[in-house]
Length: 97
Image 1 (cartoon, rainbow, N blue to C red):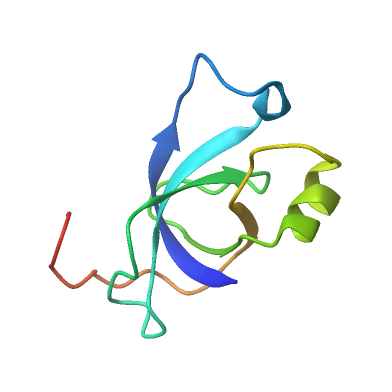
Image 2: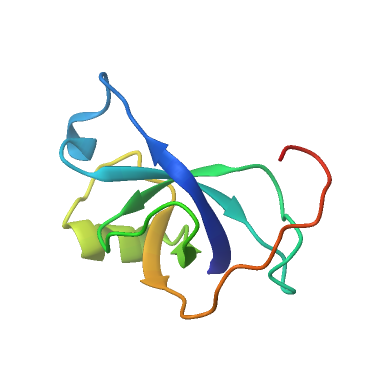
């Protein structure tokens, strides 16, 4: 699990059938200090209603994804597990803005 900042939504007209009607977000993983970036932005599936600027907890655990979405065979790699109460702080500059 890792905290991440939601950068915005992703829209896809052609996708795997298991992704139909699922909300896709672009999320920036954050380091333990929740200020600095930890890698490149990720495409994350969301069922909790997160939006741009929200702080979320994400997971890449396949078992959790299968349980959350009831899917056995899906290309979902990352999913939102929860919304964090803290307000996101300004990210440190470096790499993409």
